[in-house]
Length: 305
Image (cartoon, rainbow, N blue to C red; front, top):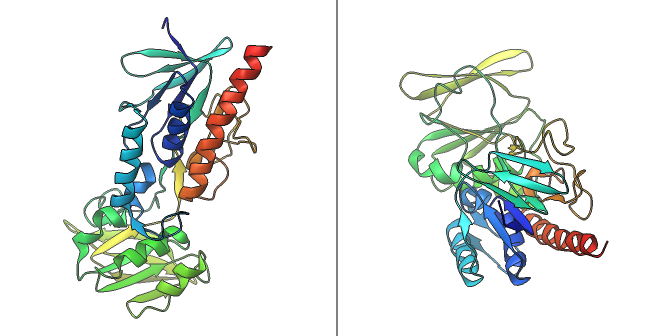
């Protein structure tokens, strides 16, 4: 570890890529690590609310991100970070084969799908139970499916499935769907959609593949025959490597201030892993930019002191 980097970015979703672009343009000594490229972009479907782009989809948007990475000569190290620890004034990032020392770190590790934790969920994972409508939706052409969730993620999944599935049930524990108005307008009143409110999923069943689920509604157990189930009940932050180092919420989201600084000086966080809870590409991009600029200011202050 003879070389000390100015910053190491963990994650290559929107937030991590934004931070890397700014780090490259500032000619900083930095590294970026990630298990994949694009993060939530890969499950986004149509994108209609990113400023400067009227409408695109996750494939085309991902291609543009890749072009920007190449234009800025950014090399992503595709390996998971195992630990991030503080050693003196600096930090050590450890992967499977090597350790890297850095003066600052930017956590942009994103989030993963939250599970229902009900009977049959794990058994039928990838056998009718899925957490990604974009990835697996085409497998359910002309099928009857359920989307479980009550917010934007569930609405986006249902909207994507409108041109694929024959019938779509949306099960929400709330009295009605909650999310962006344009999504509600496009989805809730569509003839293919049936909203089931106050529905608590209790069990997923089938044989070699999903056949249906049981849910509780107003203290009565009901049965719904299905060919597929899309779980869209939010995300769990990928913060296991950092939660014992910086302050986090009870669900693991990293607590940041308006400069994306964490409770540990020199560590910044951006995107879906933070406690901002907006889950929007444009917000993640802004946070990624802010985190890098904040890290650069931190380095300058400490250089002068």
